[in-house]
Each structure stands twice: as structure tokens, then as C-alpha cells.
Amino acid sequence: MNCFKCGEILKARKAPIVGEYAGESFTVTADALVCKKCGYKTVHATKLDEYRRLLADAYREKKELLTSEEIRNIRNRLDMSQEQFAAYLGVGVASIKRWELGQVQDKSMDQLIRLKCNPRTAEENFRDVRLRAGGEPDEFNGYAAFSIVKLANTILFFLEAAPNERRQLSILPLNKLLWYVDAEHFKAYGVSITGTCYARLPYGPVPDDYTLIYRELESLGYISTQGMYLKPKRLHDSSVLSSTEVACLNKVWKRFHKKLAQIVRESHTEPAWTDTPHAQLISFKKVQSGKAKLKVAV
Image 1 (cartoon, one colour):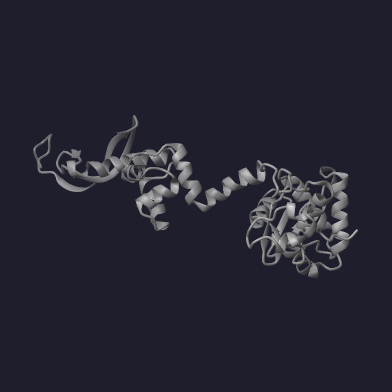
Image 2 (spheres, rainbow, N blue to C red):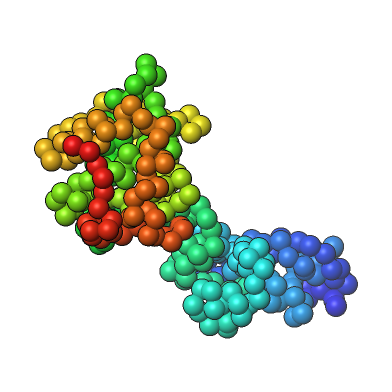
């Protein structure tokens, strides 16, 4: 092909080309035909689709959207065909094909891909929804909206009471103390203290997604984590707890403070744990039923 301006033969090579997408100008490096004499550059018809994809990706990067290559890499990482990926996202396969070929997805679709495919984004979203906004009261949170402030101060109470100079507790017994406190208050008053959901794991009841919860509490300046141990970074504030809640904290601590090493074994005797399948959430209804009545000492 000859140069449109000077008639010299155009040579194929990579070159920066200026183009427009959605009314905005971008410079992308693309397969082009270049005139060595006058500098004229153009894109051959067979390379136009790739050129348009590069312009679209430049636009995506400016708008902080996933590029076509990033979407394709996500799909490949999940080892999914375009059809499988479309079904996973709940969109038509035509949308996947268009996004990978260069058509820009809208912001809502971009967020959908990130939430379902990017663990870090999903975790951040979970934190916002679960830890900050809380959830609707139901049988799995003891009919109390989740309160990270109450949970934090409950943890601080136990850490301050820990029988050692370092004021620290292992996560293992602490998780059980939290369960007993919420279960005991629910048994007495029909509502838990912290609104935390608990799951059945081999070592007894644990706050659901507790590692995420503890990381959030650390980032908020309530605690510090040192391996499997937690330490307080401030004193607990009893004013955020009611008198009945404070009484439950003291009651549970009085029962277990001299036998923290046995708390796991004791939690295995609770029907609320034994009657729940592995890794499933524990219903607080099991706490109140006759066969699942907790044996918390007065």
C-alpha cells in the first residue's frame, strides 16, 4: 500500500495512533502502516477491530473499568468458557463476547464482575454490607442487628479480664466466649447481644467469617492480632452495653475464666452445636428449645 500523502510504500509496524472513543481522544500503540518519508500512519482494514479494542481499553482505564484483557483473564483464571462465565454472572453470552472484543461494559456490570470474581473486592463489599450496615434480624443472629461496636467492646471486656499480664486471649477460647455470651442473653431475653452469626466448625461455635471481623476490628483500632492471639488497644466502654448485657458478660466469664482450656470440649456438649451440620450457621432457636437448652452456670 502506498502513502496517501507522498506516494511512498507504507511499512507495517507498531506505532502510536491517535483515535477517539465515546467522544474522547486517546493515543494507543497498534499495528499500523507507516510512511518512513512523511510520517503518515494508518490502520489496515484487517486490523481495525483490534485498533478499536485498544481505544476502548484506553477509555476503560481512564474510567477505572476492567479492560477486555482483564475480563478475559478473569474468565480464564476461573477456567470457564464464555457460556459458563455468562451463566455465572447471570448475563447473556453475547455480552461476554462484546466485552472481550472491545465494547465497554457499563459501571454496574463492571462492579458485578469484580464482586463475583475478585476476592478482594468481594471482601470489601462484604465488609461494607455485613460489618457496617449490619443485617436484618433473624434466627441466625439472635434477632439482633449486627453491632460491630457491641462486639468490639465485648471482646475488649474479655481481653481486659484475661488472667495474665499481657492481656491477651487465644482466638479459640475467645470465639467460644462470644458464643456463650450471645446465647445466654438470647436464652434469657430472646435477643443476642452483638447480632453475630455463628457457624458450626470442628472446634465449636465460631463467629461466621471471624478472621474478617478481627481484621476489621484491628483496622478500627480496637485490637491487635499476634498470630492466634488478640490484645486490646483500648479499654472497653461498658456504656454501649445494657445492664443485662454486662451481667451476661460477667456471668459467662465467671463460669469459664478458670477453665478456658476446657471451653472447646464444653461447647461440644451444646445441642445447638451438635444439631447443626458442619459449616452451617447455628440457629438461635436451638438455644431456646428444650433439647438445646444451654447449661450456663449462675
